[in-house]
Image 1 (spheres, rainbow, N blue to C red):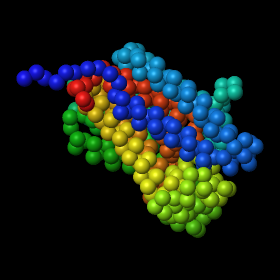
Image 2 (cartoon, one colour; image 1 turned 60 degrees about the horizontal axis):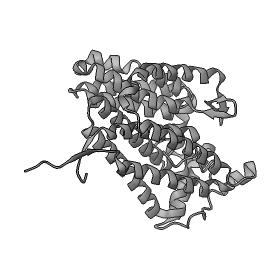
Image 3 (cartoon, rainbow, N blue to C red; image 1 turned 90 degrees about the horizontal axis):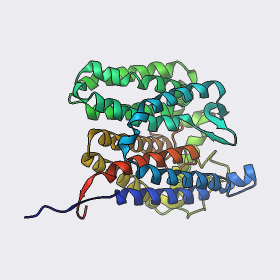
Image 4 (cartoon, rainbow, N blue to C red; image 1 turned 30 degrees about the horizontal axis):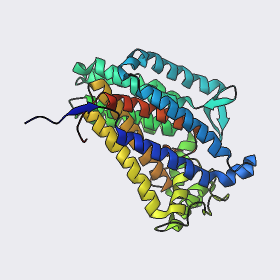
Length: 366
């Protein structure tokens, strides 16, 4: 009996879901940001135009990267990591401050967040480093050596952006866990990670204040955003008020187009609309898993795994913040929240995963 024919092509399911998410993201962003755009910039299309340009740039880069053999990025793994470190240091000294945080660097009329570049650079670097030392990954010494380059990035990014530092740590943890044949030693690494996080939180009083606000948001002025987000979610019901009909976005929920956009989605589209969006993210994460398990080699599998960890952690944390399941950490919802740098590098990352899928020998019909 002949074996099923195999062919090489992109993972079209992944490509279609990414396009759908990006388009839905633009629609939801416009619906959420029209009021703020009109009030702040006298242009209800202000946020949509900026995000639309970033999305177009991101798609262009994604298609270019998807057609490049991912192995050709290996020589750029270490330089990319070093650039991420340099940019993270630079932003501490000459970065632009917004809402009390230095996260942006300006290059003429353009500004970007180096932390978004750091996520992609770290996935590529760790995939290369683990592949190079895969036979030693069962040793605790090698695990520590693998984690060592991650700490400077976490410390530098975490100084002004704790949420992104948590995501980067999570990505690194997943990649190291997947590559290691022994799991017991991760208990000690987990204990060390919790201790490191406790010390990091204690270094700044505002971080501990966030814990208090999380427990009793109604007792603190800074809990206002969390409460308004919960009001939006509760008022949406099953099918929502209707697209564009949110009340909370009309000045009640600050910066509704950013971290708290999921609450406006719940208000306008209800549980049904929010659930549909979550299904799209689940399909995306599933395709990452399929590509990782069918990848041609370990390097490709780790790239897909890193992207899967990134998407999974960021989506879970954003929704957890919006529903007040965890303290507010300022995490955006991938493809949906406003942020040009985020969408550009997310799409570049999708290009890397598509490049991995392009070398997979898919069975006919898969």
